[in-house]
Length: 129
Image (cartoon, rainbow, N blue to C red; front, top):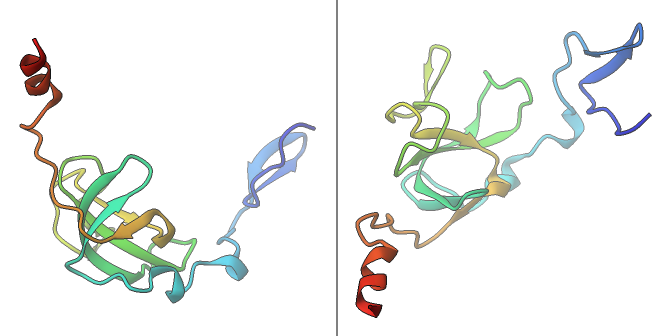
């Protein structure tokens, strides 16, 4: 009872267990259309979190079992979960925690300049005093 289990889990002997060998929902894997218009070198913003960076890779990543197309992003600051490498494959170069493989639906490309972290709200508060 309660919430529905994600598809990669089942109830076995009264306990929730991951389905052995489960490789994702192959029918609903994001295809090339999910990354349409995204190219290496484009500036982007990633949701959630309005994290900004540069598109460094667009395509399939065999090391990720859920399959489909991904966008490799090199973030402007350490808000990611990787450095551009998965296992032995280098997809792009980034400092630790400055990269991520993101689904296209979470990436917006366009005019997203690097944020100026020195331009804080403190300055405008001082002007108001």
